Length: 414
Image (cartoon, rainbow, N blue to C red; front, side, top):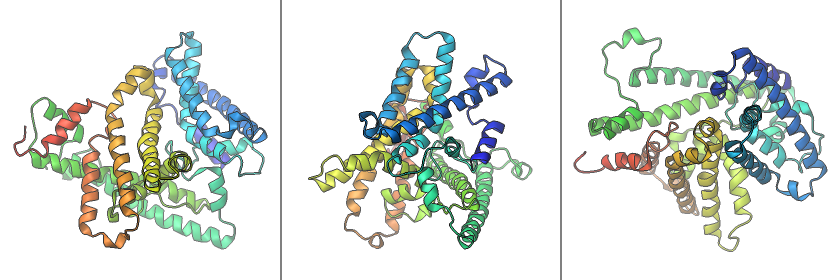
C-alpha cells in the first residue's frame, strides 16, 4: 500500500489543481518539486505528531487531539489570511495548509486511534493517507485501524473479498457508463455518442436555469422541475460510480470495505437516505461530531441528545468539512469574504441537519417496514429540492436561491 500510494503521489500529485494560483507565478516543473518537497515535510511533521500523541497521551494537548488539531489548523488559516508575512513565508504557509487540508481527516483518524493502537508509529503508515485506490478528502475506508480490521486473514478470505471487489468494479463501470450517457443525452455534454444526438433537445444545467430566472428570462416551470430531478439523479450517479470504484479497488487489494453507496432509492426516511448515499462521509461526521457531542451534552434528555448530536454532525460538521475543503476560495477571497460567500451552504447544512435530526427522532420505535412508497417519494423530493442550495460555485446569495425555490411553488410563476 505504501509503495503504491507513494508512486501514485509522485507520478500524479493530488495538489496541482489546488495550486493553479501558484502555477501562474512559477513554471510547472518547479511547482511539482515544490509540492512534493512540502508533502514530505508534512509527512515528517505528522509522524512526529503521532509519536508525541502516543508518548504523552495524558498531556492536556493530546487528551482531545482531534479537537486541538482543528483548532490549530483554523488558527493557521487565520494567520495566513491576515498576518503581514513576507511573500516566501506566505507562499510556504499556504502550501503547507493546502497539503494538510488534503490529509486532515486521515490524520484525524490516526490521532483518534492513538490510544487504541499499541503498534509503533511508522512513517510508512502515513503513505496510507490518500491511498492509491482513490479517495476524496474523505478517507476510503476509515483510517489505518479500520484497514487492519477488514484485511483478509486467509487465502479463502482474500479470494472472497477479491471476487466481491470484481463484481463491484463491474457494477461501478456500468454506473460510470450510465453516468456518461446520462450527461450526454440529458444535458448535452460532449462524448462518444455526439453524432447520434444532433438536433435532439437537452435540458439546461441547474446553474443556468437559476441564472436565467434571476435575469428575468424564466424557463417554463415544467423544465425547472425536470432540471431539479435530473440534477439529483446526476449527483447520485456520480457519487455511486466514483465511490464504488474506490471501494472495488480496495477490495481487490484484500480489504473487505463496505460499499459507499447502497440502494439509496429504497430509503424510507431522510436519515436513511443520508446513511445510504455517501457512507464514508456519513461515518466521518458520526465519528468526529456525532459521538463527541452525544457523549457530552444533554445526558438527561435522550431525544434532545440525539437531535443535538445529529445536528452537530450533519449541520456543523458538514459545513466545517466543506469550508476547509475549498481552501483555494479562502486564498483568493480572504477568510472573511470566503465565509460570507459560504452563507448559502450554511443554510443548506442547517436545513439538512434539522431534517435528519427530526427524521432520527421520528424513526425511534417505528419499524422501517411501516413506511410505504409515499415515504420514499417524499425523501427523494426533499433531496431534489435541497440540492438547489448545494452549489459548489456559490454563485448567488441566499435570497436568490430561496426566491428561485419559492417561485417553483407559486400559483403564478414569475
